[in-house]
Amino acid sequence: MANAQRAGRLAQEIQKDVTDLILKRVNDPRVQDVTVTSVDVTGDLQIATIYYSILSDLASDRKKAQAGLEAATGLIRRELGSRLTVYKIPELHFSLDNSIQYGDHIEALIRELHQKEGK
Image (cartoon, rainbow, N blue to C red; front, side):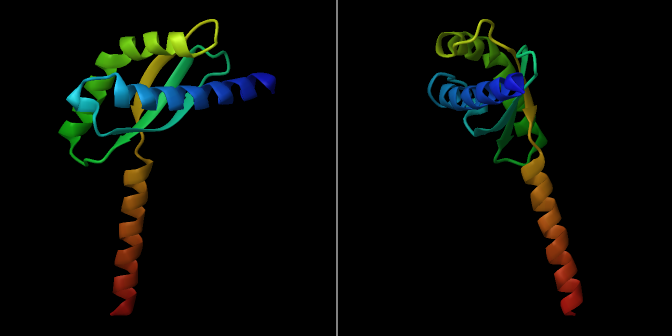
C-alpha cells in the first residue's frame, strides 16, 4: 500500500513539473498546445506514462506533438532529476489521452439521439 501511495505522490509531482517544463523550458512549437492530463507511475517507480491532450483534432498535429514530446524527453528527464527527490528518475513515455475526444463523441451521439426524439 505504501508503494502505491508513493507512486501516486510521484505521479502528481511529475505531472506538475512536466506541465511547468513544457510551458517554460521546452522551446518546441510542436508542444505549445500540449496539456498534461494525468501521469501513471509503475509500482516499482521505473516507468512514468504521461498522458496529454492537444486542442487540435488533426492527426498531423497529434503526430507533431508526439514527436515534439519525444524529442524533449531527455531535457524533461534531466530537469526532473534536479527537481524530484527519488533515487532514479523514471523512464518517460508520452501517450495521447483520447478521453476528451471520446467524451465529445459521446456527447454528440447523445445530442443526436435527443434531436431524433424531438421530431
